[in-house]
Structure formats: structure tokens, C-alpha cells
Image (spheres, rainbow, N blue to C red):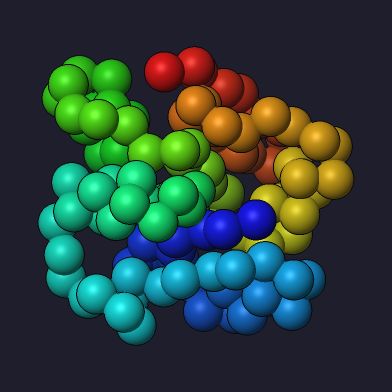
Length: 116
């Protein structure tokens, strides 16, 4: 899958997802300090799923009236090690969860989704 990791997404999880064969672009490395709406535009242009710990993306998509990215994975669990995010994403993908056109909230206890 093609992902766009927001600035707050841990590097060890980025590397773990890349090691698992995913194409992961990092905002911290490739476009530091850009605004959230610019992250969404980049995700749209490059057809990438946003990975973030920032709940503001939900506000922008559902209340801001902006064009939506292919999908957003919003993690509400950081875990005790910096690879916890990658583990949760891999589990979500292994469950064959449909992501496109959805805002997916991933927690340790499970996931919730809202279609947009």
C-alpha cells in the first residue's frame, strides 16, 4: 500500500512498514512543517493513505469541506515502543479492512470507521 506518514508518525514504524513491503513517504523527511491541508493535497495527488496521530484531519474532512484524501488511518494508541503503530496497521491490513474513502480510527481495542 501507499502511505503518507504525518510528521508525528514514529520513524521506527515507518521503517517497519517499509520492511513489510509498503511504500511509505514521510512528511517529516520530505516536506517538514507543511500544513494539514497541504498533507491532504499531497495524499490526493499521490494517492496515498494518511497515517497520523492528529485528530485534526477528521475536523478538516468532515467539517472543513475540503476534498478528501484516499483514506486516513488515525491512531489513538501510541504503545510503549515506537513500532506499535506499525503493528496495529499491519493487523488492520491483515484483517482485510477496507480503507478507501474512510476515516479509520485504530485503537488497541479495535477499529472504528466513518465513510466520507
